Structure formats: C-alpha cells, structure tokens
Image (tube, rainbow, N blue to C red; front, side, top):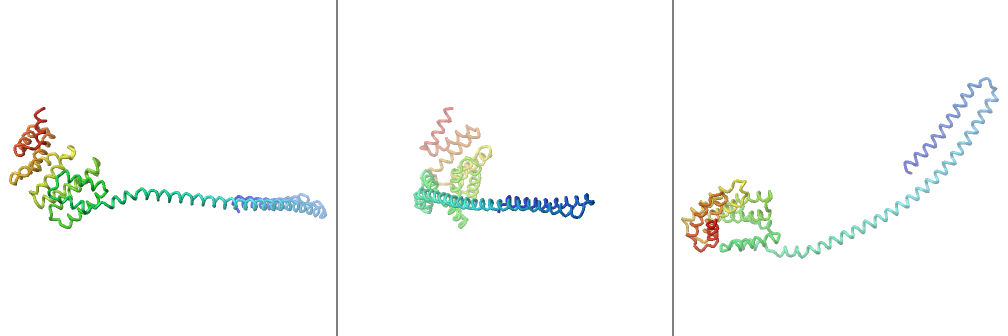
Length: 306
C-alpha cells in the first residue's frame, strides 16, 4: 500500500478515537455540571451518547471498508499498468540494443578494409629500407611518408628507440632515432607537442656527435633542424655555428655532393639574421666548389637582383 493510503487510514482511525474521547469527556463534564440531576437521568443521557457514538462508529467503519476496497482496486490496476510498462520498456531496450549492435557491426565492416590495409604494411621492411646509405633525401622522405600514412610511425619509432638503447655507441642508430623524432615534429605541426619532439631529436643528434664529433650526418641533421626553430627561441646562432663547424670539417674530408648543402643552408641562416653580405659570400664559396648546384645558383641570383 502506498504512503498516501496509509496516511488516509491513519487519519480516519485518529478521527474516530478523537471523537470517542471528546464524547466521553463531554459527558463527564455534563455530569459534573448536572450534579443535581437524578441517577436515572444521568444513566439515560450516557446511554444516549453511547448510542450516538456507536452509530457514528458504524458509519465510519463502513466508510473505511469502502475506502479499503477502492484502494485495493487501484493497487491492482496500478500493478497491471506497471507490469505493462515494464514489458514495453524491455521491448524498447532490446530494440535499441539490436540497433546498436547493427551499427557496430556496420562500423566494423567499414573499418575492416582499412585495418586489413594497415596490417599489410610491413613496418620492419620499411625501416630496413631507410638504412640504405645510397638513399636520396627525397626517397628517404617518401618512405617516411608511407610509414606515417600507414599509421605505423609510432611502431617504427619504438623500434628505433629500442635499437638505440640496445646499441648506445652506434652513432647511426642515434641519427636514425633523431630522424624518426623529426617525423613526429612534422606530424605535430606548430603546436607545443612539436617542441617536445624537436628537443628529443636534438638530443639524439647530440648523442651521435658525442660518439663521433666529425659525423657529417649527425651535425648536418642537427644544424638543419635548429634552422627551422622559431626565431624567438634563439636557436639561429646555434644553427649557424654548427653549419660553420660542418664546413670547416668538410675541408679535411673527401668531397661529396652533399657538402654543397652546408653552404646553401649557412647562407640562408646569414640571411635570416640580416647579414646579406656573408650570405652572398657563403653561396659564392659553395658554388666555386660545386659549380653545378642549381639551388646555390638560384640563391646567388636572387641576392644579386636586390
């Protein structure tokens, strides 16, 4: 039975009890006031009061019986309604679940080809291809793009980190790790995350230079990556110093076409800091050593046209 029904029954019983108390109390008061009446008169009056109370109590009990019957009927009706509501709710829940299951199955079916394509990509084979010493910069970057597009960048990076950790005295392993971190820089764009990966790359190149101070790849990669840091971070002078060191070290080594890049980037850095004369002189020195380099020729032509 609901609380409201219990409350109504309690109120009715309390009313009956109150009525009896009041009636009895009223009779006693009347007795005290009518002390001069005869004993027979008092008995008749009391009997009449009891008769009235009895009649009223009977009426109240009949009302209570009717109320109990009505409440019982309502309770049965509510129970039937609740059961019906529950059944309907269960059906709706099952329908929703079936709909979600169908949508999930459809999503899985749509994602299946993409997942299958990702599984076909051999991250280890791609990493092995990056170890080819004859690989051009353009081809190397194309392989990195394939790795990134396949969603395998983190997997390849984990392998590079493991290899560098297993062989900490291997400069090439540190350089490859630094290159891997740079790919994360490119993917992150210009946000704060890019700075985190750029720092990791710089430290990897430093580790390689700690092993071999004259390692051209390590210093070139470090200098180039520093050259792309925002000027407000003050890395320009550090980049210039590394390019200058690189050119000085190249003088004692057998010439290689890639050495021309040191002159190209150093001239570009001088331009960034506003020293156009040094930039032109650097490019001209580079062109003297590498007369067929089209990029240096272009920079000289642009500088002389202004």
